[in-house]
Length: 168
Ligand code: ADP
Image (cartoon, rainbow, N blue to C red):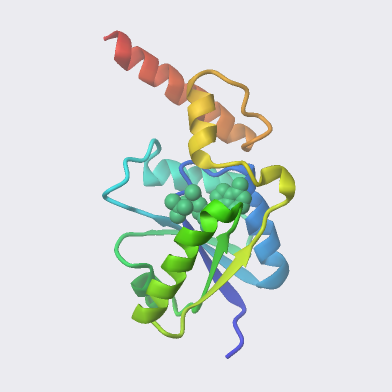
């Protein structure tokens, strides 16, 4: 079966220029893309699902080809609900490979029709991650080259908020 739609799952805490690079690459292959924010009870995100969704929405400028959703539970169950069989993920370095390899094969055990498509970002984003962006942003560093401007703003607000909480 030929797929016209792909699902791009991730934490997106927050969205970075690396994610945007992958989103644009995906849309060169697939007509539609569902960006799926994973709600993982074991991870403590900096931004709420609503905040993450809002930042993605604004960063992709309400592109009609993109739908943004969130899910908890298994990716395979979400994919089945969405009637999607193609998952897009990014590979930045060898370090991503082992985890992604395991995840793809485990998921295939759970749902044999699920396919994973891996894409490499532009080399200028291969070192970029949400966690480094957060760390630098919260410490007051300049993250304008790493994330869309609204994320830069939101991180500065978070830094102030956390600073206020600390002082209390
Ligand atoms: P997760 O917690 O699922 O890894 P992330 O939001 O960190 O969620 O990443 C989602 C996906 O986007 C992953 O496949 C990750 O490899 C990819 N990704 C994140 N940052 C980049 C980047 N700079 N370039 C390419 N892919 C990236």
